[in-house]
Image (cartoon, rainbow, N blue to C red; front, side):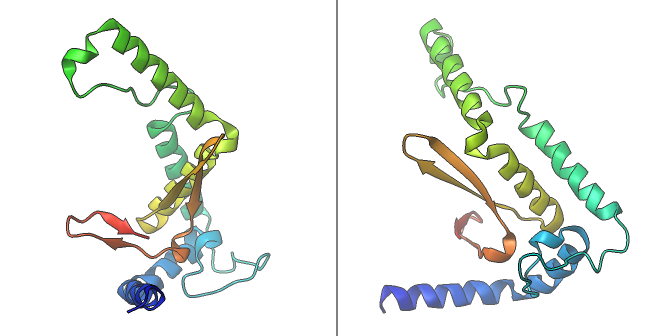
Length: 170
């Protein structure tokens, strides 16, 4: 079997395995996340998407969920992680501590650089997580610039898990 046939067959299988979810996701998306809800309804750019929304509380609640989770988990104004060595004895050495502190500082600055798109992508990821229970974020390495973060709408993605229950295919 050639690679094209194998990949086409795998995509068809992934599409089939999520078919039951798509109607539920479409209904949810129509009411709380209309810009990211083209599971069964394909809309053109600029087309009205809010015609099924009769009350704005779910939209506001989803935005608050995403903002709250974003500010709690990855605040741009604080260090939200700290690097440590697996070997605890190394964590006690002053040179190692200084290196880890500097590395943490550089990484935090990298996440906070606007051109890396981390915070907007994280907000969109959390919107999808709150609405659909699943979000997709891709990290692309751009040589000379560093990582670039992008959140992809769930309707464009097909996922598969391995035998350990971890997503290993998108």
